[in-house]
Length: 452
Ligand code: GLU
Image 1: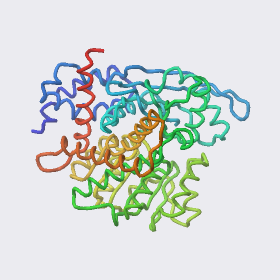
Image 2: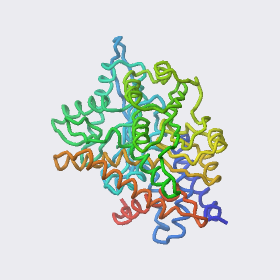
Image 3: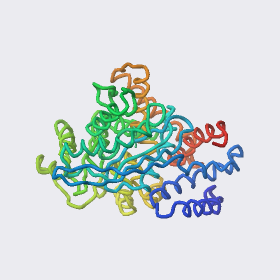
Image 4: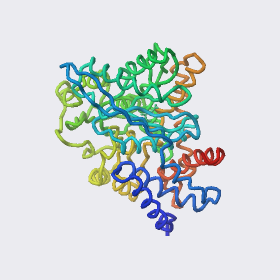
């Protein structure tokens, strides 16, 4: 009997408690269950953590802020959006995590993201707590001026709740360099302070080299470490990627650097299949696609004469590695069955929780490589942590220095996952390894700081 089955009753009891307190929050409960299934057996087997209500405390955000964001669009009409900041856990450092501007944003998504962020940030070895925020505002179809007015209105409330030693937001879906610039400008105006209150800033105003690439680079460094363990490498591998935004862009660049080939990109409209690989000027074209605010990938197919599959997902292509970079629950059991059938080596999550629980089960039951986002995509927030360090020191490291530190952090996370996730048959359960390693750091800090 696996330890998971042995503790099934305790897990179900805990999930009953969590579901009652967080009804109508399916994404949050999905993230909680994934952690509970690996952490409850660990707590039961490690008396130091027993009877302390650690998990009950960890699933309760320290603070949730919800606010109205009103702004005027280009037609002169008043728009009302909802803004949030979920300050989840500050046991090991100031709240830290991105802002997401996307139509799917609600409290459930932000609670799942803030909860995951707490574990992810703990894995980076840097002193950062977990938080997440955003709005149901979508940049799709908006003008630059509208994006600026919305970002300014959002910051007019958020500025009260954040600060370089309190809570340091960054980007996420829909929030890149442009949006962060507008957010930072308004924060600085309101506070009359130039501090490292946000990360992902532009290079000229306190940003870090490699931050834009960091999430994608980190994912590929992790994938390379995992493949090396299996006696393989990215070199010569064909990779399917979803999305076409910042994370996918970093993945594409690093896969190319390491001699692999990314053959798909996707958007809400479908996916493109480029058998020659996304390389050269096609990589820069990805940036233009994002800047167009249209949220479609088809123009890539039109421009480079490759195949476009409307309404389809890239997981039906035969590749060596699948790297979902778009959004939660984008990869379901059908996709998992597809990639297994096509002989994939594994799936590495670059987005946050892109695989449904059923998909994870299929991948892991087939003993294929599965790396959860909280481990694989931690490179983004890790370089955010390095940006905070540079801001505190008031200096800027070289790209080589940041990249070297990023690589070290990703290899360290990989080793930690292996340490806590190796099964008796030698299979590495990266999900279990990441959860336990993250939990230990946060739990130890919480125990030391008393009941607060
Ligand atoms: N949004 C990114 C994430 O999911 C980065 C957060 C940050 O840099 O604070 O980890």
